[in-house]
Amino acid sequence: MRSSTVSGNLFILVALTIALCTALGQTAPADRFPEPLEKPGMPPAPLGTYRLESSPRMISQFGVFTSYQVNVDANGNNIVGDAANEPSISVDPTDGNKIAIGWRQFDTVNSDFRQAGYGYSTDAGLTWHFPGTLQPGAFRSDPVTNSDETGTFFYLSLLVNTFCGDIWRSTNGGQTWTEQSPDAAAHSGDKEWFTIDRTPTSMGHGFQYQFWTQIFACGGDFTDFNRSTDSGATWQTPITIPNAPQWGTLDVASNGNLFVGGGDSGSSFWCIRSSNAQNPGVTPTFDQITTVDMGGSLVFGGTVNPGGLAGQIFLAVDRSGGPTNNNIYMVASVSPFGGNGTEVHFARSTDGGATFSPFIRINDDPVNPNKWHWFGTIGVAPNGRIDSVWLDSRNAANNTDSQLFYSYSTDGGVTWAPNVAVSDSFNPLEGWPVQQKIGDYITVVSDNTGGDVAYSATFNFNPNTGQHEQDVYFVRVSPSGGATPTPTATVSPTATATPTPTATTTPSATPTPRPTPTPRAEPTPRARPTPAPRP
Image (cartoon, rainbow, N blue to C red; front, top):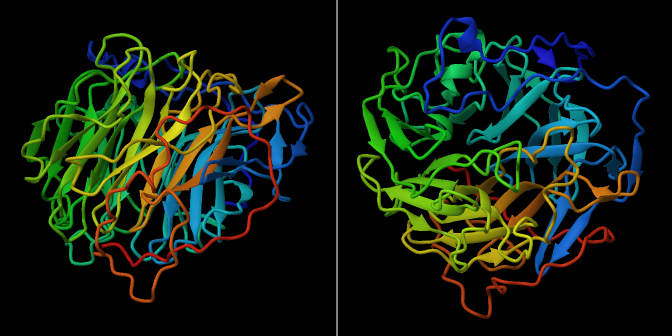
C-alpha cells in the first residue's frame, strides 16, 4: 500500500514511443485513431520557475445555478498560473454531502507535465479542499473516479509513460487516498475507464471491471479488459474484447451482466455484453455484440478542443427496480454533418442490449452544422431519471464560446425536457497548459432529485497572461431548476419520478451569455438530500 502523502520522483525519465504496437512489429488498424490521446511530454518545471500566486476563488452565478471552483489552495483561493481539466466526480450514495473529484492537475501552464489532482467537499459542493495530488511528481492522467454502494471512493489513474494504471481507495469521502497495489498493477492503457458492481445480490458484487484502448495497452500486449474481484487490490490477467472498442465507458446491470459501450474512434459504435464476468471461477467472455446507430462520428481535433476529443461514448444502466430497470443508455457527441460541429445523440435498449432504438437528438436548438454540443455525458438516478449535461456553443456568435447545458428524461429517454443553460459562457481556447485542449470529458452523478456535475471552464482571468485559466467547477443541476428540497427521513430509492417541468419552473433555454463572472462572497449553505443507497 502507498499513501498519497508519499512523494514520488520529481523527475521522470521520459522515453516517448510513437506506439507500443509499433515496438511489437504490429500496426494499428487503418480505421483507428493512429496515436494515443495521452502522450509523455516534458518533465515537471523546476521549483521556483513559476509563482504560486492566489486570487479569490470563483463562484459563478448563472440564474438559479451556481458553479463553485474546486481546484483551490489551502486557504480556499484560486491558484494563479495553474490549469486543471478532465474532471471525474463521485458522490457518496449514503451521504450526498460527501463528494470527491479527480482531475488532471498542471502546476503551471508552461508545461504539459500533469499529475492526479483531487479535491473533496463535505458540504454538498459549496466549499472544496485540494490537498494535492495522489502521487506528487508522478506523470499521471486520465482520472476516473467511482464509488461503491457504501460510499467508498475509488480513483483509477494512468501512468502516462507506460500506459499502465492503478486503483486508489478512499474511505473518508476523498480526503485521503491509499494505493490498492503497486504502481501499474491494474494494467490499463490509454483512455481507460472502470465501473463497479453495486448490486448486493449479484454474484459479482463489488467486482471492478476496466477497459482501455487496445493498441495502446500497458506492456504493448494488445489486451483491453480486466477485472478485480478484491476491490482493486489485484487484477486478473487481461484479455481482449471483440471489436477492440475504445473511447467509451462500461456499466453493470442489476443481474450482474456487464455492458461495454465503445467504438472505432469514428462512426461505429457497439454495446458489448459479458454475462459471465460476474463469475469469479471463469475467464470472462463476451457473448453479445450489438451495433448502435448514434447518427454520426466521434470528433478529434474539433475547433473547440483542437488537441482532444469533442466527447467520448458514455454507457449507463438503469438499476431503479422500476419499469425502466436494466435499460441500457448510450450518449455521444457526434458529428452528423461530416464537418464542423457536433450534436448530443442518445440511444437506448430495453431488451438487455440485444437491440437499440433509433438515436434521439437531445440538444433542442435549431440544427446548425457550425454549432458545438460537446462533452455530452449522462447519469441515471436511483428512481430512473436520466440526466444529461454537455458544453454548448449555441449562443456564441463565434461558434466557440460555450456554456454548460442540462436536460433530463423521466420516461427512459423517450422524451427530453427543454434544454437549460446552467453556466456562464466561457472561451475554451484559453488557459491551455501547452496541450491545446481542456481535457476529453466531463461527468455527472445523479440522485433522486438532481445531478452533481464536474466540468472545466475558464472563468478566472489571469492578468499575468492576459488570458482566462482552466479550472474545475462543481454545479448542482435539477429538474426544478432551483434549490434541492430538504429530504424526509424516509427517502426511497424508487421514489416517484420528478414531474415534467412547466414554463414556470424551467429557466429559459436560450439566455444571453454574460461577460466573465466576478467572484462573490461565500454562499449560505443550502439544504441537500442524503440519497438512499443505490443498488
